[in-house]
Length: 386
Image 1 (tube, rainbow, N blue to C red):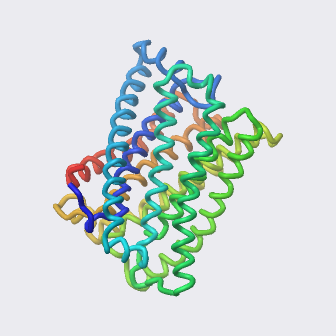
Image 2 (image 1 turned 90 degrees about the vertical axis):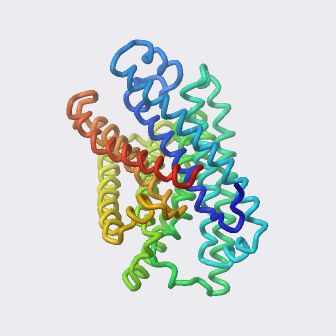
Image 3 (image 1 turned 180 degrees about the vertical axis):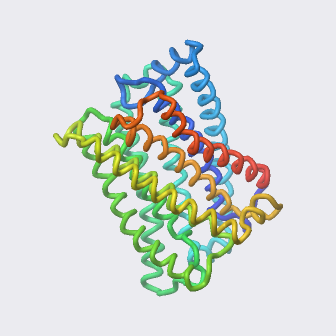
């Protein structure tokens, strides 16, 4: 089925959400499988534990199934969306899109492809034997991949921003939501991608390039976050929120998760190579602040969407909106950063003992959000017949 005129770049959010869910199940392996020799669990550490027949074996098997399943959906949706977009570019609707506020939706493309690199990295670490022995040769390619994604994100954004500054044709009447922050989401995704080699490489040059690239895109994200958050809320206070775009209230959650993880990775990178000892307490304060902000925006967004009947209209009924897939990433983001908060904020500081009852109890609310996110994902998948 070719949508042509009916297509919108926001459809890429389906692929993005699937990729995020795949990575979210890697978090169980990341924090439950011991991996003292490496910064992340790899095949040689995961599969011996899988064969032990313990409770951890069950968790690993469960996680591996969902990592594969959602990675499959990610690539399936990515191929479909790419084909649809190439057809869409030939239409008049595309020409009108790039002369309107909606041009910013093109940022979903580099955003989704940056997620693809993360998904590939997870699949490689988990399923490819002896990959870590050549990982230093892979980090330059990862940097190149995120540089390409960052280049296209910058190109799309600068073309868009320079047009509205030059022409003054930004339509504030259609800005009563936070959809404009999709650009910040894309830059934050590139930032966290750069931060991985910045944290994990044992080569100082790769380490420095990764940290610089991460800080470069994080700085852009934070600057735009202040600007677009202010503009978006001003228009919402004046006009009320756009019903279809109301999930954009939750877009701050994945942005905070990505920037938070980038900051954590940068801290570890500076500790390894730049003689800047890591203060464990700083991880507690950083993760606590970010989780707090996510809870506030999560509750606010849920209350607003409940009041305007968003879930009944776009999730439970037959009405379809590609923006609905924007619900997936916040759920993924809250779960992922919840795991970082428990493990780096609390366990790392010995507030909670790893594998204790309290440890698993703290995981339950975040696991519930992950479960609800998966339910919404499959409801939307059936509705859009992907």
